[in-house]
Image (cartoon, rainbow, N blue to C red):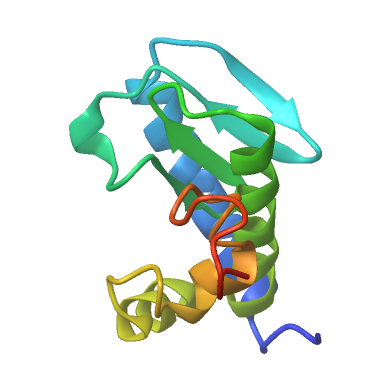
Length: 122
């Protein structure tokens, strides 16, 4: 999938914002995972659900299991593809993860939205 024009700029800008946000709020371990920065120990008010991906940064309190990280790596690729458009596209996709195309693409099971083996789950 070819990135949108200016997507690279938006991706790097979002990564800088995510990195600054994570650096300011993280009280836990910070590490790299397959090119993604993982910031732990953030306060729960800093993100919705189990964490948030901003550019190449994943910000969470402690939600860093293998499946979740695999899910978040797909979001990193989405950021890379859409850049500045990603937050708006995600917003228009809706808050219900079971209908949000970005969450479905990242894997509902890996993201913890449905149980493994549930009929109809992707």
